[in-house]
Image (cartoon, rainbow, N blue to C red; front, side, top):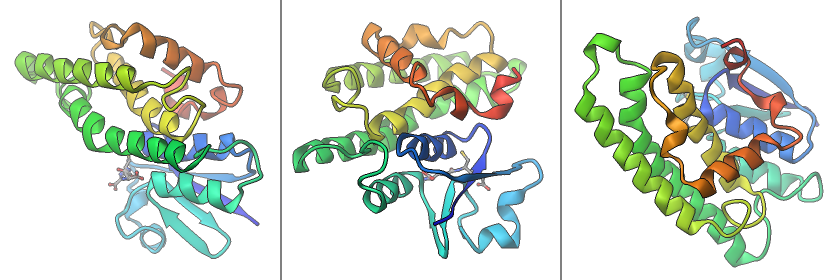
Length: 216
Ligand SMILES: N[C@@H](CCC(=O)N[C@@H](CS)C(=O)NCC(=O)O)C(=O)O
């Protein structure tokens, strides 16, 4: 077995896949692609993912893209290695899958305008109303996720749902690099603030912080 993760520093989706690999305690090689060098558009990468996006997991002759599919594959292919990403019975696993879908279908869309304004728009071109409305939508989402929480982690035990959600929440924090007056943690509920701290205290967490974020 040889696992290779094609990864981009700062991609929340690639971060998810690396967190899943670490959770499963699997050995892997990290191939870091450069977005600025357009590595994702090069023919050799397009052969792995015609949608030109990271992450891609290559397991010998099997290439898989889409971060959530990667997490499920790792858990099913190595059920007895590391800890389960989709633990429990059918209902517990359904809950994990539902939370992941909620992250991708609702939370992801809620954070988009905030990231667009704070991260990708020049200071002088920012639209304060768009930013404020975006923050309100994020606050609403945080309230829903807090209500849905079943224990210390989203679904109760630590699972793929936490790894799907965390990098998106961290991206909000990353916006502060471009917009220092933005206190992204202030949008979190106390419950999610404690959840975030629990994720950041995981033994494998530090190893997965996007390399260029560490240089801040
Ligand atoms: N739905 C995909 C999203 C992956 C994605 O959007 N990756 C971005 C980085 S955050 C990417 O590789 N973009 C490069 C490109 O579009 O060429 C997943 O969950 O894996």
